[in-house]
Amino acid sequence: MINSMIMAVTFGEWISTWYHIVAMVLIVIGIAMYILAKRLAIVIKKNDKLESNDKLITTFRVIALVIFVIGIILFCLPPKGFE
Image (spheres, rainbow, N blue to C red):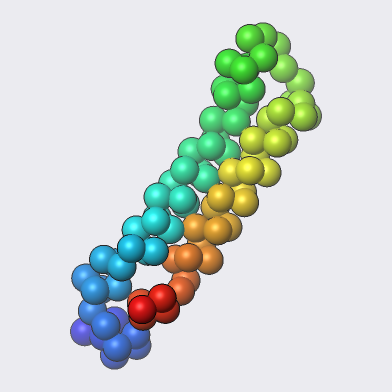
């Protein structure tokens, strides 16, 4: 009820828009990629010993944060933003 007063749509209508679904997927991918950045770098370099400031880890984390921010921006769009 309070959702429909604030946004003029119900939660079901809000969550069922395509860009909110894409936003949630991007947010999850960004978080997972950030958490798994070190493991991905180990697999790509085929080396068990990596420094904490390795460039590949930093690159994965920056890409993950960009994906996360794009997801947050899409998530904050109003329900009738692209329609």
